[in-house]
Image 1 (cartoon, rainbow, N blue to C red):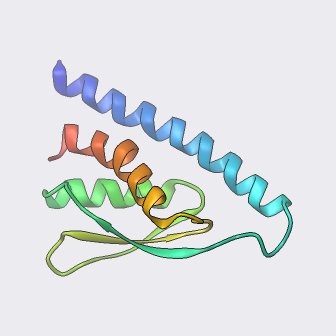
Image 2: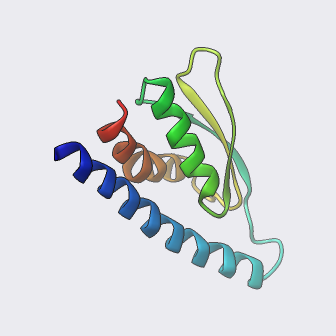
Length: 108
């Protein structure tokens, strides 16, 4: 039962992040040009299982404005392209706090 609730939390978190990201991408596209600060981020991974890394990378890619690019050879870093990241550290912290933390509940 606990695992089923954890999967529900993953799904709800994804839907919330999807909505927030969709709004941010719409504002970015319709906003003034030249304001975007795209970046490639090296996101250190706390999730260790291969399935957990895949799930996190896929959720990141399905979220508008972000695309998973690669996982380091040692499996400890996920490289992510972000459409707009004025504060790289904040963008990394947000991904880890919302998405990765939920993934770790179901696939450590």
